[in-house]
Length: 365
Image 1 (cartoon, rainbow, N blue to C red):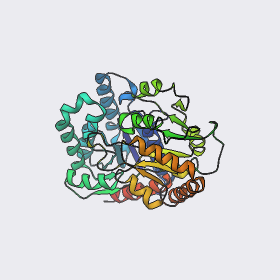
Image 2: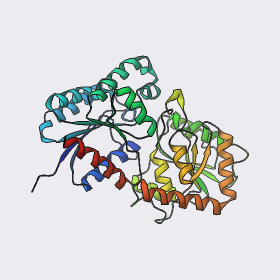
Image 3: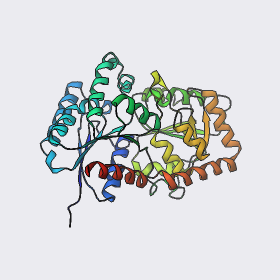
Image 4: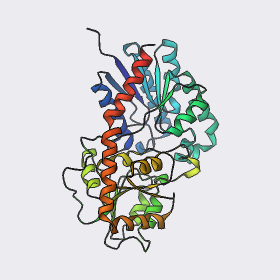
């Protein structure tokens, strides 16, 4: 009997409970293990703004994590990297040792300057670091069609495929435990960061079209938390902070709608967005109110799973909320459409199968 294939998964962004990055990593690993792979995660514990560690400590963590994997590289058939500008040393070492490397692309190099404003001046350096890695890669996967096309041009080759995000349909489904939140509400689940439209959704709550008896429930934490705290004087706002992964489905399931109102700060979202919250809300049978950005808007329109609003448009968000609140049967049908789409095409099981096929084709070359 042949031995199972072994995969090293490298993440230089520290996985944190309740964050989309950890969900993404955990679900992909689970899907690949289900497909027969033995997967080992190599992750730093000091990478990313959420760790609140110094940049020097992060650099040390990046180095230690890559050394830990590099010294054991011969144990693995392939390396899967959650794309990061500091993963170049491991990428080069793996290529020299003949180990195929697959990068998962969740954004463009410009995202670094949007997340960390003080690093924007180093954008040319980040572009060089990413391009060097992508050109060396055995394969690239992008989470939106726009990122796939961008990566082909940026990397200078066509070894790129689309593998988007998804939802755990064992957890996120229309039937399940009732929400602990009472009354009628619209929910936002995600990091409290500027491009998620935190300012805009808080402004929407004050618009005349927002129904007086409908609350806005925010699940998550992040660098924009002060804005949420300052808005808590409005009793229609409920902030639950970061919640355990398995507690989120019930909260989402009980909502009238889920907000996916990402904004295009500094062109960050021009290549498309595929937020986990979108797939998870749809899987729960909850209609989504999504900003008109590539991929997510196309997906919602094609699945007939919600309403589309212009980015950064508080009045439009409030109007969409009112529309759903005034037509509960229509809202229910939109939710049913979304749940059917995710079950049919966008579960993490589907995504695991897609990545498995790519990995096996690369390893067999």
